[in-house]
Picture 1 (cartoon, rainbow, N blue to C red):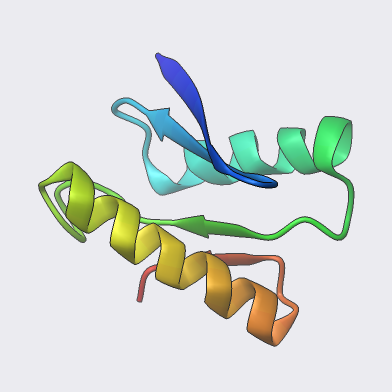
Picture 2 (cartoon, rainbow, N blue to C red; picture 1 turned 180 degrees about the vertical axis):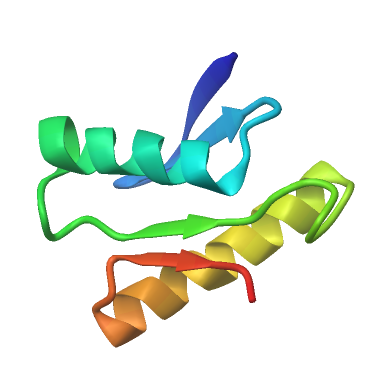
Length: 79
């Protein structure tokens, strides 16, 4: 399932239960195409690859988001 949360201002978090990277990319593509537009930026972290706890996942996804904004790539996965 998918759960969405507003975390402040114009930033939102999505929880994609059991989604693999390809599925996450497809969700982001649909959001960008249908709602957010080309200037939106996204950061993604996954469990258990990057972190196992919600705070760790959020922190890593937030870092990836700011890297996407900084580089202008629009989408960053935690490296």
